[in-house]
Length: 253
Image 1 (cartoon, rainbow, N blue to C red):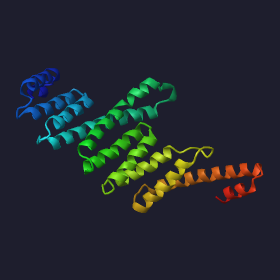
Image 2 (cartoon, rainbow, N blue to C red):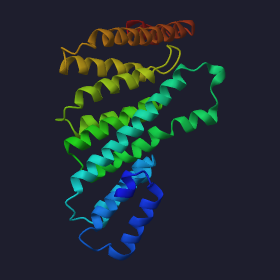
Image 3 (tube, rainbow, N blue to C red):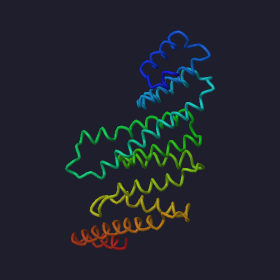
Image 4 (cartoon, one colour):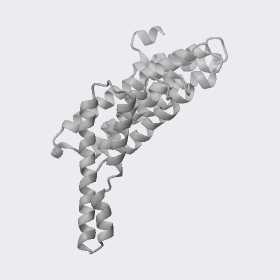
C-alpha cells in the first residue's frame, strides 16, 4: 500500500503477486486483490483495473468488499467514458481532411472499454439501480461512438429491464436521438423517421414538462415532413405508371 501511495506501481504490483502466491487464502486475500486493482488504476491501465477488481468477486465471493468493488468498477467505467467522450468530440469537430481512419478507430477505444466495464457492473448487480445507470451509460457510449442502432438497443433495455428506475427519462430521450441520427433523406427508408416520431410522442406523454420538448417537437415535425415527402414521391411514381389506385392511396397518406 505504501508503495502505491509513493507512486511505485510496478514494485507494488510485484509485492501483491508475492502475497497472492503465498497467502491467497488468508483473511487478507481479498484486500490484496483489491489493491492489485488500485495499482492498475493508478497506473492508468483502466480495463486491467476493472478486471482485477472483478477477481475479488470471483475469487472471494463472501468478501465484505463486494460493494466497494462495484463502486470502483463504476469509477473505472466513468473514467473511460469521459476520456472517450472527449476524444469523440475532437473527432466530430475535426476537419474531414484530418480524419485518419486508423487513428479514429483508436480514439474510440476508451468508449469500447467503458462498455466492457459497465457490463461487468450490470452482470454483478443485475436489476439494481446501479445496473440501471450502467445500462443507460452503455447506450451513451454507443451513441458517442456513432453506433446508433446499438445505442437504441441498449436504451430500450433500460426501458424494458429498469422501467421503474430514474434513468427511464434519459434513456427515452436517448432512444429518440438515436432513431433521429439513424434516419434518412426522403428518398430512402423512413422507418427510423417513424420510430423517431413515435418515440418523441411517447416521451411527451410520459414527461410533458421536460424542457427539451420544444426541440424534440421540431425534430418530430421534420421527420413527419420526410415521411410525407416520401409518400408524395411514391404517389407520383405510381401515377406515372398509370396505377391510379396505388397512387391515390399514397396521396391520401
